[in-house]
Image (cartoon, rainbow, N blue to C red; front, side):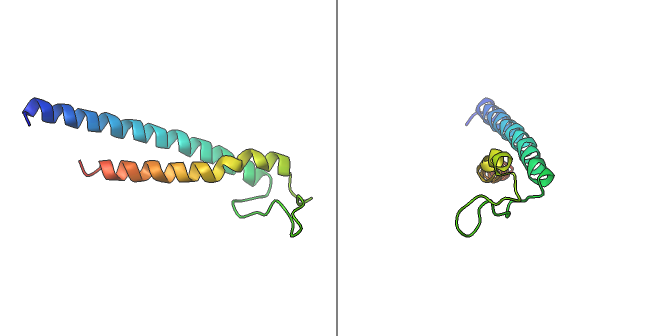
Length: 91
């Protein structure tokens, strides 16, 4: 590979890594917002929203907490992006 090709490859890898880092930051901000909603309602990632019979727990604002239902999805996306950034660090 010519030095020009190597430079283009390095530039492309750098741009990709920067895009991944930007995506990570956006996901982190969204996770922080969703976690703040949970905390404001006295809940966390492990708080049950239904009782043993499957009915909504009266002590929780289930409607508001459902807003954070994407939280697990976003946590997984965040982990994937961080792994992708880590794999790019080898370049």
